[in-house]
Every structure is written in structure tokens, then in C-alpha cells.
Image (tube, rainbow, N blue to C red; front, side, top):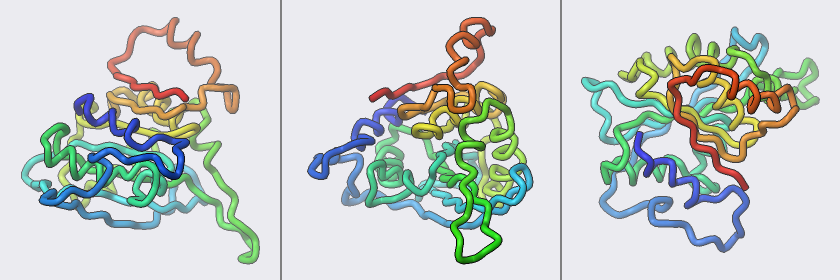
Length: 224
């Protein structure tokens, strides 16, 4: 996945003014084929009792005979929203059409919620536990549950070089942790203002990274 893909984060800033002029890659362009987005609900076994929404983007250029690259997004509802700040599917449409990034399936995953026993009450969010915890559990969730489910209908690349993972804030440290713990699954990380702080121990990463043998992952960090 080329550097051009990473640059889309600057065309849709996280804390943008209402009148921020979107770049051309963040807007639908005439003659550019539009990919398809499907949504489903998932009940997890790796995170027992949780339910979440998942969206899957399949580009118009997808050919089932050729394995497609994969990009996973935490807080997926924000990234998949074509009226929001990221407009990722529109960016994918444009950059794939321009051949600046390869044919790529996007998987947009919301954090899990634990339904309330009383339907009048709100569900309990499992976001911080899933995203901020330093463990391979979230990567296992992707490996054992989400990637196989999405792969039932699509021919996906199985190698780490063909997979990336992205998130903002706690989703950003989650993306890094998934690749750090399982570089055999993900080789590329895009972290928007990742929460590398002591929410659940993330402040230890600088020292840990310096003391650990280099891993085969590439990381793009956005600060702000």
C-alpha cells in the first residue's frame, strides 16, 4: 500500500473547521467507479457478550480471481461515513481508480457493546478494554472472527504485507498493538493521534520498543 493512501488523513483532518475545503480525493469524482458497502452485526466469542456493527467496502475493481489487499479500521462508523471527516470509501474509490493504491477491501469495525439487561438502559461500551489493553486479544478477534467472516464472500490476501490497520485515539493505539503483537497478520499501521498514554498501560511502549528487536511493521503516526 503506497504512501499516497496515508496522505488521505490530511485531506480530512480530525478536528476540522466546518468550512474546511475537502481535497479532490475526498469528494466523488465523475467517471470514478463506486465501490459497494455492506453492513452486518457481529456477536463476538473472543470478547464474550459483545455486539458490534461492521461495514465492508468492496471496490468496483475487485476481481475474485485476484486476492485483494485489506485495510481494517477501528471506530469503523466514523471512517465509513461519506458525510463525515474521513470519507474513507470515497478516498478508496478515487485512489484505486488512479492506481495510487492497490485494489483494497476496507473493513470498518465499531467497538463492541454489552447489551443492558434492562432495555430502557444504555449498553455498556467495551471500547477502552478492546482498544487500550496491551495484549494480542484484539488481533485474535480479527484473525479468528472478522477476517474469516469477511473472507467468506471475498478473496482476501492472507499475508501481512497485504494487510494494514488504522484507528484514531484509542483506536490508533489498538491498531499499533495489533501489528506489534501479530506482525504475521498486519505489516502496516496508520495511527491518527493514537492514545499512547497510561489509560491501560500504553505509556510503556517507548521503552518497550527500544528494548525489543525490530519487527517487520511500518507505522505512520499522525499527531495533532
